[in-house]
Length: 181
Image (cartoon, rainbow, N blue to C red; front, top):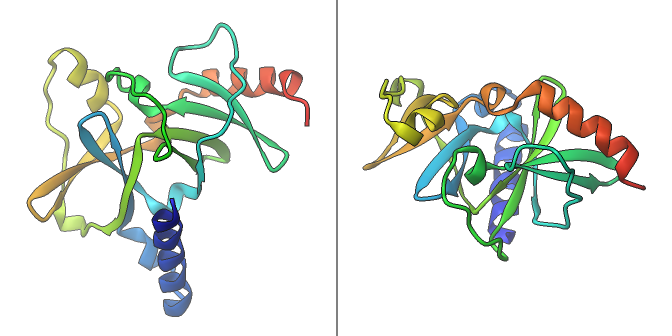
């Protein structure tokens, strides 16, 4: 967890020293879910917190784990592994919640572990493959590109597609009445 905080601080320091927002443009927070590594543009990441108690909400999708109270703000939390219909994993001390802000909606993403902050040049991003085989097609609808990083690839997520506006709105409304500050 400390190494994750250091990575984010390093990215913040680079942005301040250069004085440009463009520094963020090619930076991605990478994390593990199932057997794969995913990337999320750093501009969407507000913070990374340790896994904490979640208030479950009845009658929601299985991947919608519930709500957390983060410094007085109620935030819906999604388990990325379940969202991608991967095998569930047992939460442990490496499990984190990536707090992202998409279209003025703040949401937490539960991930197995944070990998690193990396830079991926635009020319190293390929469009996702178009395959329609079982569970893979489900996962690919959230991926906008494939980032080539050395000898490996990272699936780059589109946070807009990852979030279902109706479900998030319903969770936030339920959360306002369920969580006591």
